[in-house]
Length: 168
Image (cartoon, rainbow, N blue to C red; front, side, top):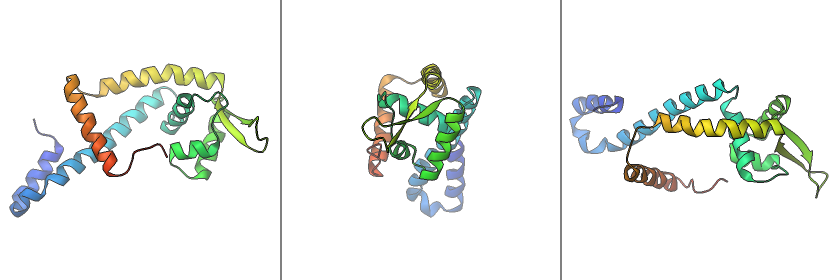
């Protein structure tokens, strides 16, 4: 079965047969780019069904998986979210208005503030994360464990190649 990238590559092969052996990077990157756009759209639709923006889901899951009952500093959230400091402040403000997070003074340093989940925020993330995992599984084809392991390994190699080896 052919995909949209195969159609693009076939056009290039027809127009530039001299590049036949050099088209393979376009096959890889084209598929990664198309998958990214498709998955972003599907995940945005899923989050909207739960009255969440994708970035809100990211903040909720970052706070939840951190295991820090006291929360995280805005700087730590900033690193995880990969946005500007102004954007993270705005996002925290909006989530605080929705009752999902709260700002609390650091017990060790009263000048410092941490962001933590509210009871409502924890309930939302615990409920939605399970549904999120089910949704992600539904988005993917039915492959054998060995096929998933091979795909995961290949994707990991690509991320390592670009230096994406930590959350920072």
